[in-house]
Image 1: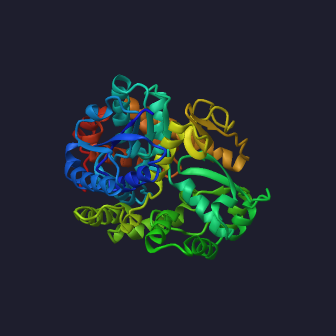
Image 2: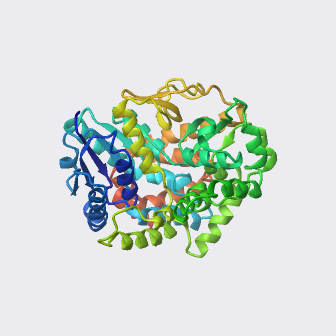
Image 3: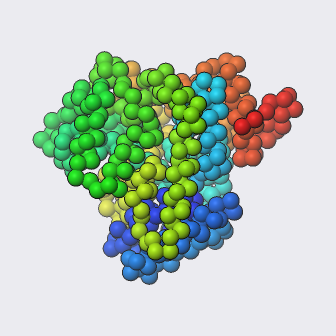
Length: 474
């Protein structure tokens, strides 16, 4: 059996211990020889800390895998079978800007939504396309497994502008939605059938029980309509879990990443499909904005909290006796991403035909969107990649939002690829979370200057803006 080489871009991430744990759990089905953890010069210290811990984890598991640490991306990509990406251009300081600058103008600031999400795409897409160019030369048969956010847009850019079809985008939110549904029905996930469709961080889903009875409306009535219903659902999810598992469940239910303010009861009941937690930014925008503004004033935006949590994690990772994923990682948010990546790699390698929710080419699964665009849907995972499962058409109330958001994504991606300022302004204008007109331009200009180090495609426009007196004062 061929031994596998796996390269992880962003190997110095605090998520890496979960990734290594996921590979170790699948040691009997993944014949790994080498794992290469790659980072950049600014991430060297973190890479060395978490890389040493990864080596300890592999040794403690009694495995002979080689775990390499490098700042040389090309060395890591050479002859790789799988490449996973979990990097953040500009590190957490860039995310802090993405959240705080919009909020300073009274506009929602969030990592993957609104202005912050678009700027994360602007910074990330040129980098991922550079990785793809290296892959074409060094590992042309490799699969790219992406959970770098905004995952859907990054995956779309790889297919559309990188001309690389062996890519799959992943997210932990569908996993969390499954857990919440199971808690709401006081059962386990394996007793339920789920169907998801939409975009990354903008999907809906339906649920059936073991007898084939649809439970979607019941869940809408009893969980997503009230805070109490959500509390009951999460209580059921966490009953019997250990402390670390409870931390993970609370973190990734949205309790930490997204304020769990109630949806409007009548509106959400009328959907007849279950929105994901990120829909709160679009269905109850004013409530979410006020919550974020309060956190912003207190210096407690999610990005700032994550930075503090990550600092504590790396202090833990330095312990030379730590050779397992610590419970505290559940406080970081994003748990299950890495395990999902390991499951996907295993499914492709073994042609296991498991069903997962992934970002992949539509191919008619969502007929309301172009067949060649990327959607987030259930798919059967084979050695040839994801085979998307048809969802069918959306109702007008959801279809309108879905089409708008996809067009916003496509416009954002084009702006990120071309450096076209007009396209960037168009993306800001059509994004539902950014007011149009002068305020959109003001916000766009300030964020361009603030992030200029990581936006080479906008270099000329940024120089022009600075000449006009546009500044970022932190």
